[in-house]
Image (cartoon, rainbow, N blue to C red; front, side):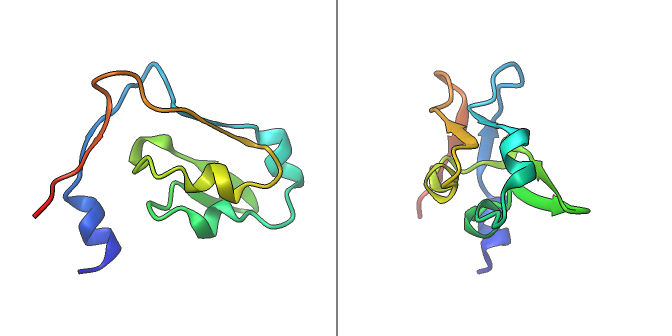
Length: 90
């Protein structure tokens, strides 16, 4: 099963009032490598016409982006209670 198919079966309860990840666009504008676009398994980070586009709603809460960004642009916290992703096993 492809990763896109696996991600499609996840349940999300998105908190529209609180983004658990924030990105500093000023840092991203000067970033030479954009490792976040390669590291994120949910493809929350994409480049559109050379500018970073970020959408936290599809995040799988793995924290990879926090580690992958060596320039300090990503601020990652856990979602507030009762929000976030629900994984199904089996």
